[in-house]
Length: 161
View 1 (cartoon, rainbow, N blue to C red):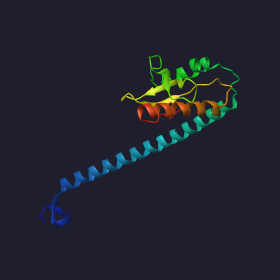
View 2 (view 1 turned 90 degrees about the vertical axis):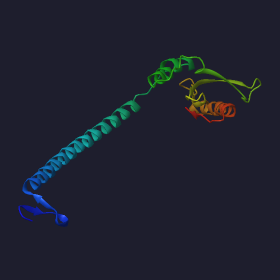
View 3 (view 1 turned 45 degrees about the horizontal axis):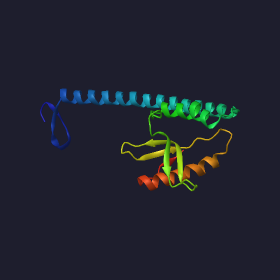
View 4 (view 1 turned 180 degrees about the horizontal axis):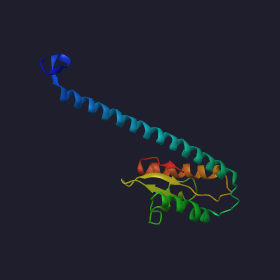
């Protein structure tokens, strides 16, 4: 061990190598402290944003929407806007007023307000619009019937909105 420090397993390290390893350890510890500080800052920001979102939701829930949109207006001013923002091409053919067969009616035909199609050409979801003053139960029942028809035709049950 002349001129060096003994490492594990009897490996001789020079003074320069020991100093280099100590410097690397020091740098690694400094990087760890920086990462921990950033993580703490991110956690604090996340908590702040969660609280802000909760406050906005509470304020939004306190505002009563007294609009009595007809179904066409519900679609135009609410649903179309949100679907476009989400990237769905609702203006293209086959996305709105999609005809389905097998409905429990005299004609057996129904028209789904919106069908959201997958890349494989099968329906992923459907959206049923109703006048804002109607209860959700009516729309849910109709949407369930539409989903039954789409599932029978395409072999996949769409999610209902």
